[in-house]
Length: 541
Image (cartoon, rainbow, N blue to C red):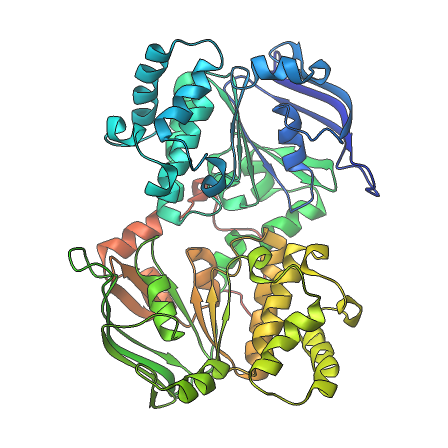
């Protein structure tokens, strides 16, 4: 690379009290017009590297080494320097659109302000804001300028953040996990738009992601980080076919790429009797609008995994909440083990809720930060009067062991655990009530690929050992294909496709399912994968 846009030499970042550097001895370059993906698990240093390039490291961070962008030494900038250059040299697209926009300012005020702080006249900024919103694929920009963030969907808010990042035509755009909370269709639209705009402007893009499928599909070059060090760099083709570092191979094997090739294998015996039967389910929140759930019918065989997929707003979460008796239904029937759930009395619902438990999407928000693990996991024991208080500690120790956590964590609080550990605690808490059905609401979306693989392995082990039935709500179609016995596809409140997993993936019945599958990262035709997969999931032939 003769004249790189970004050049980093022997860069190191330390935080007070940390045992090891967040980033150490980092050397990398990004060429003009190049799309580079930085991948690695949580704590690998990829977000710290991005923050350093954008001048967003906390004041407590100590940095050494050289950071150059377009010939300017970023490591010498003070905060005043950054205030005049951030946005003009570097545009930054943060991860969570729900928390990154000011809720009390209109969209127009926030897009326009990104330009006026750099001396652009308000009238000129207003005109450019309309163009930017159109360029990121938003319709009716004049109307949108008057809207507040809560009036927009997550995908629309993410497009607004991209418009803000591009407002001052920076040569470098940094996108930190920009689609991790979005379904596959919106993800593809956002990444398509981002890639098009970067190519059209001749800008460079540093895309930070834990999703190797996205990296392999979008990058000119991929950088693999772990423990603050750059382990490997290469084109998608190189890393896919000939990864040189064992950790890269580990990441590939833990990624959705590998899960896409996994297959559930079941003995060729008689189908299991249904544990749960849903018939004619309907729910409408607004008499004038469309139904959130419309005439939905399906069954969950005992001991099986059924995945419920669809875009945001498709009705899958409302369906799951009705099954959990957390939401009313306008019509229909939910039979659990032959007994009607809808309209059941308080005592019957109490017994039902013990047998059906929920594992939430976000392990950071699902656990009370004020309580230790002993209190958190034993809460269902007290709520359902299981055993007695004297035995609670031993029962919690057994539950921790079952989910692969040591007993010495009992007195720790959630804030002292990793994301994967927290999700294991959430699963242990759900198991405390000795349920028969677990509803898993996007249980992997907040976790990086290696931890996702560990949690999936745990869920499969628990199902085998305890005979659990799973309803797996997800937008990760690669994982769905690897773990499911049957798949339900929802769109606009209706089931548009359902059947055995192979049938839905190989012979989808609806155009919507075909489009959903087409929106999955395509990995540039890099399949078939030359990856060693567990033999019990390996595809025959």
